Length: 306
Ligand SMILES: Nc1ncnc2c1ncn2[C@@H]1O[C@H](COP(=O)(O)OP(=O)(O)OP(=O)(O)O)[C@@H](O)[C@H]1O
Image 1 (tube, rainbow, N blue to C red):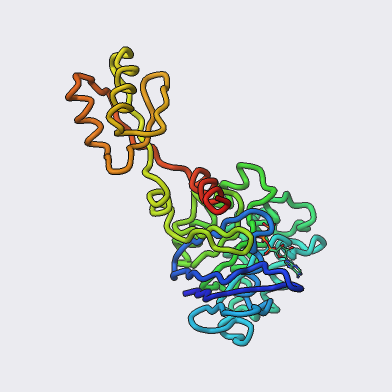
Image 2: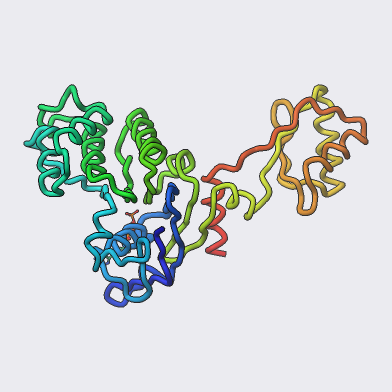
C-alpha cells in the first residue's frame, strides 16, 4: 500500500505540491494524471525517496523509502530517461543490472525477461540499434528484473507509435495480472490511462482535484449520457420537444437516427422511456453512453478554474 499524507513541496518559495493525500492499494493500476508541470514527477520522486518533502509524508507499506533499503528493493522504476547503454547488447545491459542487483539465478532470469519482452532474437545486438519501442521494453525488463512489488512508470509510452504503445500497454497489463504487481503510472495520455488503469487521481498546479475509480468519477460530475434511436424519423423532433418541455433531459442533440441526451437531475433512463412511450413514440434502441476520461478530465479542469 502506497500512502501519501498531506504532502507539500516548495522549491525556492514556490509551492509545487499543495497538501495532497491519496493512497494506492496493492494490485491496483493507478493513473496519476495532470498537465505539464502539475507535480506528478515530484510526487513520484518523493514517494521513491529521491526527494524530501517540505511537509507531510509518503510511505510504502508504512516504510519511508528514503530511509529503508529493504523497502526500496520492493520497487521498480522506469523514468522518462531509460538509462539503457547504447553500446551494450540487450543481454549485456540486463547482465550489467543483474550483477548490480545481485539477482539470483541470473542467466535464467535474463533469458526469461528477453523471452517475455520478445527481445531474444536481438539479444546480442547493441541497444543503440534498437527502435524506441524495443528500447522501452528493454528498460522495462531492467526495471522489473528483481520482481518488484510496485512498479513506477513515468510517461512510459511517450514518443512511441500507436502499435508500440498498444504493445507496451499489453505488457503492463500482463505484469499486473500475472506478476500481481501494483502499478503507479504518471501520464498525460488520457487514452492510455482509460485503457489500463482502475483508479485515477488528477493533479493540477500541485493540488489534487480528484481521486477515484474511473466509474465513480464518471458518475460524480454528471450522469452519463444516453443515445436514443427511433424507427420513425418523424418522431425525433417530437421526442426532442417533449423531453425539453417536460424538463426530463439536458444537452439534447440530434444525430442521424435519433438523439443523444443527458437525463436531467432527478430523472433517469426508465422515466424517459416510459414518458416517450406514453406519448406514442416508439424507440428502436436505447444505449447508455460511457463518458470518456477525456470528458471527465476536461470537466475537472474547468471546475477548478471556476
Ligand atoms: N528541482 C527543481 N527545482 C525547482 N523547481 C522544480 C524542480 N523540480 C520540479 N520543479 C517544478 O515543479 C513543478 C512540478 O514539476 P513536475 O516535474 O513534478 O511536473 P509534472 O506533472 O511531472 O510535469 P510533466 O508532465 O511535464 O513531466 C514545475 O513547475 C517544475 O518546474
